[in-house]
Length: 428
Image 1 (cartoon, rainbow, N blue to C red):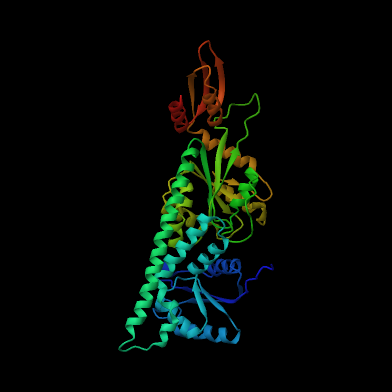
Image 2 (cartoon, helix red, strand yellow):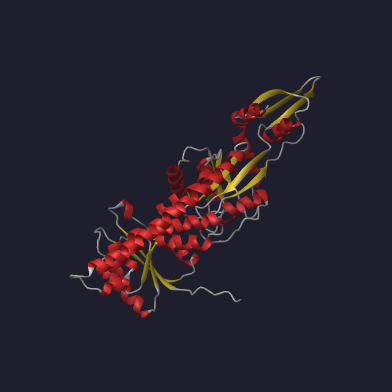
């Protein structure tokens, strides 16, 4: 069967900024990211409108005059969709639709649509559907356009409200069902997580499209899906990372032989709260990690803003106090070496790489080894001569420096952290 192609919608982007209101302050750079989002969703962006006004219009947000200007452009150019950078209240959405006479959505709705398109696993699909329903519920009345034919007066409220309330109940029931299913998925994830507690866990975090999946592939040959689109990855992918041991004769490196490294969903400015709530079970991988690699697109001129957004999101999910290594990616896209020198002087404890070209990956691995070795200490355990299982486990969780076979025991000297040592003591 021939695949049905999604119709490309001619689209106009709108961004409103209020210099007096931090919540509604935006720069024209916001339209660049919104355009990338729209193109990721399959839209054809033909024009952008940026409106800056110190007086907030509760009816149209952008003001009646700008709304009329956009309406005229939409009519003359057969525009199918208008996307707002700003979150629209229901009344503003209704007023704008009546004035512009075109399908209008805001950035949150757009992101939800992209997530829905990119969801591959059952868990991701459940999470996206939950977020969509929670987004739709307070805006439900706009879906029932057939009720607008019923003018106000006696006998009109009852049927309309009955229909809407019925639909609200159905949505609330579906939300409850989805939450129950996600709880079961979360329980399964916690079971897997218990097994992973025996290893060091690293999570790749960062702004969407910073190159996290590419880095995972470079480090582990994971074969993770990579595309130059926002939110190409929604599901957490966890792989084993082998850290190279120093050559014989050099100083002993104090680190565990293997760690687990996970790729996670990217963050973005004004990521819908419903999505963060729905994806908390996925993001819990970040919370439970021992170390975070914050992947930053060094070639993006807004990378400092993106770093702040990632930090804010990490704080929101309870991972703000984790040990973080800043990994500046895509340095091969910088215009000259002076820019790299400037970054290195400003962010001294960071690593500068190109995941796509494999540049400076060795330095990143050394930095990881350095961080993981900080809490490691030398330990010695005496085991039964036939306890090969524990010996094998020590080799997995620690750096073994000496094994001595005695008459009635095996004496193993190794380096590992407190968590792994406590686990080994329990299984002896």
